[in-house]
Length: 220
Image (cartoon, rainbow, N blue to C red; front, side):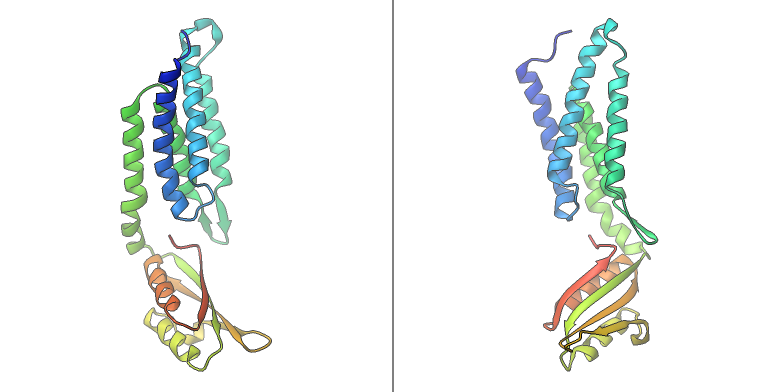
């Protein structure tokens, strides 16, 4: 079997690039290190290798074409593992690792010309990434560490303590460190639930004396 022609190759790679970019863009907008470019490269690589596998499969004396697909799965496994980061008892990057794996699968489907399969897996993956996140956050009880850096102005403690109490954190459960020159204060507290933490971060950022707010794990 001859290799696909230029137009056919361009069509398969073009579809793959578009679908990979959709998933990659979602990750990019979430601030994940594996974003748009990574997903496009993964998808295109898997797409091309699946085309090579198609050619090899038509030539019985060239070996087992399934080995190429297996190599794609193995390679993506190592890449996905690199996206996973552990912070204490929490693990980040599992969703990004899974999105890389799905992108590779979509690329393989596009590479053999099965555009319906590639498009549908991308569609359902985007539904899971976008629509189900709100439901997940609503029920999650995962503890989130909030770190606030604020100017040491007179109203700071009263306002921040009131906000913490509103979200179920008593002042005695917060840790406060004042800078050496007394101009700033760093406050650390743990809040239960991703949704509650997101609302607390939003309210803290509205205060004029707050310089920065960080959450660990990061909030989407």
